[in-house]
Image (cartoon, rainbow over all chains, first blue to last red; front, side, top):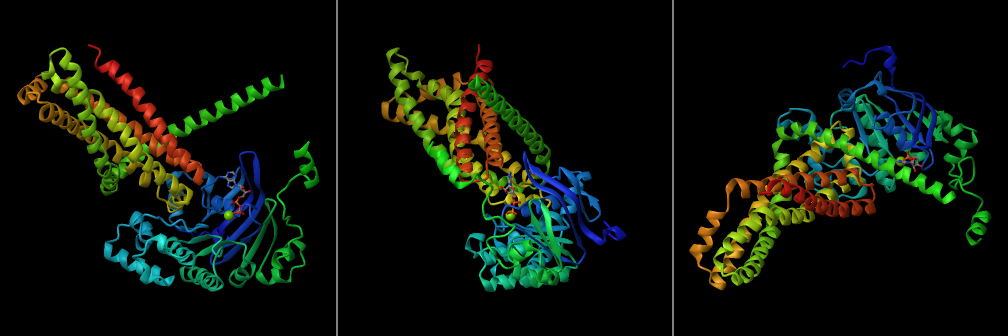
Length: 273
Length: 262
Ligand SMILES: Nc1ncnc2c1ncn2[C@@H]1O[C@H](COP(=O)(O)OP(=O)(O)O)[C@@H](O)[C@H]1O
Ligand SMILES: [Mg+2]
């Protein structure tokens, strides 16, 4: 495949994307683009549809309206084989790592290489060791996933996600549940891997400060739409109440703390009557 | 009136649900067959599953077969004795096992030992997003995870049933010949004369193949289709065991009525 066409400057482009799980509408008109070489963050409260957005870009879900383009291909037009061909150029880090629990760390990282290439075992071994070295876990190849700490598992999953040198890497909450040191390590890794591979990265996260330090552009998702966007500097300087609430971690603001419900007085009275 | 409407509505919803699930099952089966070619090309995956579902079920199959055969020996002799035909014990034991008990009991044991394990394994892979991750890596979970487990089960089952029957005959011999004192020559020669290869053994093997397909299909489907939560997996495991048992007994009736009508 060749991706030289000027339109492909935007490696990922979403136009007016709508999505619903059954009756429940999650996304209502998302516009977003990621250029080659960029690391882009998608932020928003829990349940705002960030994971859903990644799965739309990965083609595991189909938009009910609007278009999702990756590497110049409109995903809804791709058949199963073309979709799989495209996914070989994508790496995804799942929220909880999703390592294969019946394989060692080494075999986990080797998995995509063994599935998609005919490389001889020695070459695969070298490649896996290089990837593990890049995440600082070259010595951990023999361990099983159950023997890893959360931060280590995340890094192994990262090594596996980049095993085939993808052009697009997606991270679903890579910082969740990490201690401050691992958090910085993973953050720097994401930036370094992106630049070393010349790839594009999409980073879904709650962690404003860590991500503002490493990304090129930020989108805020709320109520199924892009509520705000900008470069890290613009975001820091923003007067937008939504952005302000997020960046300064205020509880009250445009992002509600409560899931939509009837007023509590009514609910309590209702249950006794 | 309102009750009637809500009843009809719920009936409709559950009907739609069942049709969806049926469609999903049909699509699943089609993909399973399409991807089976791929998993045959990488035989080591299937061999691994034969080891997990077949070899690890061996112990329970061997022990149960022996006990069932010993019980047949005791009960059979006690009954045959009344008609003065204790020598026919070998025939009784061998026919009961090859035609019915071998495939059926081995199938039931296989469903609860290996089928439930397969459902649990696939279900847990779903809960921990391993299947989604695999799919994102452009590797079909049906080809890589489901198909080898399905074929591993289908291949193991006839061997397990055959081993069960063999152990059962040994158990019957142990009780009948060694303990009760039935004539060993009569025991074996009557058995050889009465058991027909085509009619009895082959039909038994066909039954075990059919049960193997049914149990394996139920096990992989329930795992793949489960609600991805701890509770969902546990319910899927229960469903595997219960549906497999019902499927085996129902299929056994149907097959028997076709095979042994004469
Ligand atoms: N498979 C699903 N079926 C139905 N609803 C879902 C499913 N997955 C997620 N949801 C709902 O969609 C909303 C968005 O989910 P998600 O994209 O996971 O949010 P986020 O990653 O931003 O926390 C949530 O409210 C969630 O309850
Ligand atoms: Mg999420």
